[in-house]
Amino acid sequence: MSPTAPTTTAATAETAAATSIPTTRNVDHYAYTVANLDAAVDFCTTVLGADVLYRLGPVEEPDSDWMARQLGVHPRASAHIAMLRLGPDSNLELFEYTAPEQRRRAPEFTDVGGHHIGIHVSDLDEALAKAARSPHVQVLGEPWTDESGPTAGNRRIHLLTDWGMRLELRELAHALPYERETGARVYRPSGDWARGLPGALGIGHVGYSVADLDEAVAFFTGPMGGELVYRTAESVDAGTARRRYGVTGPFRKDTAAIRLGPVTTVELSGFEAEGRRTERPRNSDVGGHHLAFFVDDVERAAAWLARTDGAEVLGVPQLIEDGGPIHGDRWVYFRGVGGFQLEVLNMPPGMPYERHTAARRFGPSPRWSNR
Image 1 (spheres, rainbow, N blue to C red):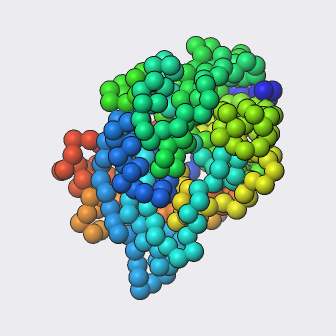
Image 2 (image 1 turned 60 degrees about the horizontal axis):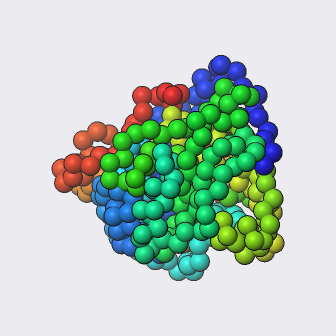
């Protein structure tokens, strides 16, 4: 791997906060569309130690185009949703859609729209031993260590779940080479994840494959208020691709690690691979996904996004007033460059779901630049 270190100053984080979505606090949740919601929830609760906060559905509007306007899906689409607390500082939203013309095959690792969740652990071997005992997990190869570049010393391994999610277990080295070149830092979770995998510290990163890496980096470090930490590049031969990643052919991968607010690192990757799928999945397709930001003022954020190059707001801000578990939630979806699906939302304290569980959502953080 070859590093490209960003140029930073002591004011970088404050500069990012000044150019991010107005009133944003933190990344609120990661969201994914799965083929079987019950299987996904069961795995996350029993293997990863997640807590179910609430379930919704069906979410549908059979007599209008509301689903298309607000969610970017077919007007006759219908969704069931589960929100989970995943570790000390993350929320995970899972969807199961039925929709006309739905694509049921999730994107592969190298396809545009490929994605994974990175769980950082204190002892990779111990965590892997527990995960590997699940009949719902396929372990890809053996753990490997980054030998060069900005992340030299990190150990990692990829896992595939039978409900369609790719996970990465990663053990971070105490000190990393990129830290000598920049003041920027990836998020290092260190919370108490009592029911997670042994030694689980938290969600250290989420990874997404994009069509144009430079365009995506400019968007996430520009209007989205992120901070570039490092870039890497590697070429992977066919044998290594199959063994470590479950990919059938060789590929080249360029990755940018971006610190996105107080508790999130996003890894954006561009791939060169023969036969890769380049059409991004829709929200309603299996493998569809979005990233959501908690903001204090949804209307202000939406108005700002409507004026921002590369952003497209879907519909208008919505207020949920149905008396259900998230009565009072205000939200709106938007698209970023390359069709990347995103959301801004605000959930006031004391949501109705809190009457039925002791578990709570993570957030909001005091401020975007709180590190």
